Length: 103
Image (cartoon, rainbow, N blue to C red):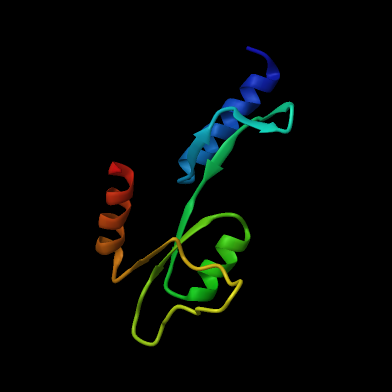
């Protein structure tokens, strides 16, 4: 196994250990007539009780879920990222995540 392959697998293992989902390995992209390849595609869901935390996560390219609490509403402002999931509590979020994985 080449050194590059060893480092790649270490990165994959570290991401998985940290809760990331590997979506593509490798991530292949077509752009016009060119075929490009990125080493890895991954995503991670961040759950937060404060909507500005979800905005920050989404601005960094992550998916986000908002756990609604009293006095903590969505900010429906044009151009502002909205959470991918909104739930009453962690059990509700888990149910919503299970629904999306089954479809």
